[in-house]
Each structure stands twice: as structure tokens, then as C-alpha cells.
Image 1 (cartoon, rainbow, N blue to C red):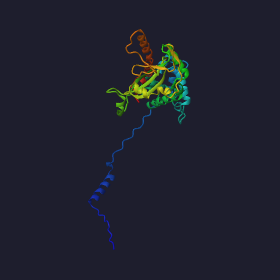
Image 2: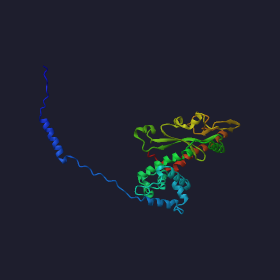
Image 3: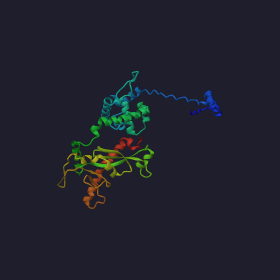
Image 4: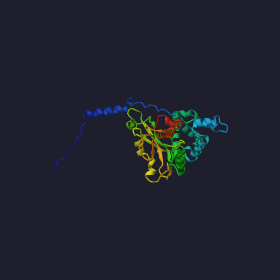
Length: 333
């Protein structure tokens, strides 16, 4: 007959010590740390209705306090254009539509939200600076800026953020011919935008040597300072050639969907438009560069004209930074 074994539990002094510690822990209330009192959220009544009324009387009433000239300087656009933007956003963008809370009180007006966004773009200031005048809190002002940029791209992108149409191309060719460069449709170059809050692991990619990290914007601008091509987001460690390899500026030519262009130079017919560039770009049919060491009157005149007209894109960058200080100041993304 098989024998069976049994486990016998014997209580020793270790169990007594554990029981004593357990009882001491739960019976002595002084052992538990006191819970910190949760800070209450501060509520500030900013009287948003007064902010809307003051804004309306200053700029949008029949007899505004400030003139149209001051409006353009502070809003960076004419009043009619600004009101067109406000109307589109207030009717088609959900965030900017007038609303009421549960008590029937009106929310922030579309004028207040759009003004807060424009002030941040125009002056490059923090979101907290618009609180005293427009009556928006910091987080609300930041949301207004994000929703404003998204709505602008959604509502106006098809009209203004697009490639040139045949009519636009004809106008660009006319301006190029007026400047002595038939077949020229713009000047191409890059600018750098400093990135203040660049993550530390990315600094090696977005900074050169010991310099500060920057983001590169490639653009094509015409003589009227219109930017019809923009490629943004490349790190500054790339030069203009590396950025050009990733840019979609030549996609239409590669895929064979570029509009036809016909013009004559010295009696010869050409069917491919070109850009004015500096010396770093490759030597090809679509890039017309200056002459580094011009010899003779003819070459000197060409170099002088090319360098003068090529400054159109530089002027466009300068006007963009002077009109919207958010691009001139370091990015806080």
C-alpha cells in the first residue's frame, strides 16, 4: 500500500512579525501621508462681449477709431480682404461659427478669433499677448491660430495654393519678357527659418556645425512677389541641390503634364520655360545662371540683368518676413 505524505504548516516568529507590522500599518493613521489639497482652477471673467464691442468700434464700425491705413499696417491686409476671410470662416469653418453656451450666452465672435490669429502671425507674439485687447485666453488664442491656418488652406488652397494655370503662365511669361528674359517664369531660391524648439535628437540633422537648427523653405517667386511654388520642411543640412532632388517643382515636366510654352530668343524657338537661379544650381536648360567673371560688355550686361531680376525671390522672402513676423522670429513649433 502506497504511503501518502502530508504538508504540515508550522507557524514561526517570522509570521508573528509580519502580522504585527500589518496591524501597525493599518491601525496607525499617522503613517499615511496627508493628501495635498488640489488647487482650484482660477476663473477670470474676461467679458468677451466688451472685447468684441471694442474691436468693432475700433476698426469695423461706420466711424471706426482707426483709419484704413492703420488697419492695413496692423492686420497686414486690406479691410475688405480681412472681412472676406472672416465671412468664409464664419460660414464654412465649424470652429469659427457663432455659438451659444448652455446659458444662452454668445461665444467668442469670429472677428475676435480671426483677429487673435492674425495678430500672432503679424507680430510673431505669444498667444498670451492678445488676451488684454481681444479678450482670449492663451490656450484659446493658440487654438484660434491652428484652426485659422487649417481653414485658410482648406477654403483658399485651391485658388491660391496651386500650380499656375495656363492664364497664370501667360502672365508670368509676359512679365519675364518685359524684364528682358522671354520664357522665364520666376526665380527659385531657398531661405532658412530658425527652429527654436527643435528636439535634441534632431539637432544634428537640422543644424550645421555649432549653428542653430533651421528649416528650409524652397520657393519660386515672380516679379509681382507672388509665390506660386513652396516646398517646406527640409533640414538645413541639405543644400539647394539636395532639396531640389526632393522638391516637386519639376513633377509636371517629369510626368509630361507641363503646359506648353513657345517663345523665341535670337530667332530660335524654344518650348521649355526656365527659372533664374544662383550659381549652386546645376547647369541645365531649365536654370539660367549669371556669369561669375563676365568679360566684355555683352556678358557684363547679361550678368547685371540676371542678378537684378533674380532678386525677385529674395524680395519675396523679405516682404514675407517683414509682413508676418512669425516667419522672421524663431519658430516655436
